[in-house]
Length: 356
Image (cartoon, rainbow, N blue to C red; front, side, top):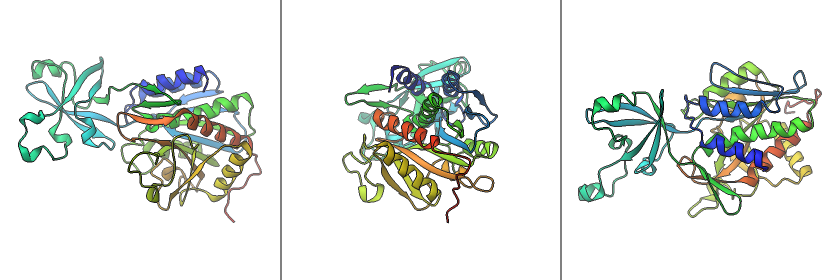
């Protein structure tokens, strides 16, 4: 990954953007896209688009959701403590003691998640798992009135955990799920800009995937609006090279093993075979993942849009998903972007993805 792409990656990951509040992260993504795309725009659902080779055929959609899990203020009490609910799926245990950034109309407000100290807990409570309803955010306010001048009910928040680089070209950050999917599709488009494809390629940073809509709200609306012939969804999947990983259930996807190609009912088999062929031709290592029902990604909304869209899922192995410190290998991002760009270059108007 060159210096420009690495700088973009750091900026994108450090910019807050929980589901429903993706505006700032989406702006970062669109600014980067404007450097090489033929057209860049946004829609009412919060999706962002970058188009290359307008009028080419077929039209291919490259989708990665740009939102992340977060928190939302639900109540501010008379003492100035802010209570909250989850945006997306959290293990409450990882929230205890974390620093947060609350996203307010006047800018970010710093705070810390509080819980009764272990010294003060009853013996029977010490071994119980934390629950969100027993936690609060302390912004240092001296009263409820002071706190309410700084934060409002409905303000979103993220964990204050910016990116760090580890040896072996591995990075740790919040928001890797799935800010890196949005990055990979744009990096694929950047590669395509150097050698224009016959296909019309549209990278999409989709919104609102983490809040539980089947396949994500933004994926559904953007796929309907674009009506592509082909869609590649980029997301993360569980890396299985950590202690206690269950490979019999999750597969074998160590960091650095390359992109993960999904096999399952949402994935078009003809399209998957083409991706495998391209990976072999380009010398790109990959692994398979089985999804006999839903994929848990934007693909679940896209493949069934309109009269059906030939869809595939390319995933990045990710350790410690839905935590403040997720981990990926940069080489997996690079390989995924290279695979997608190489695949798009093979497309032509005569391609047929009907399984026969």
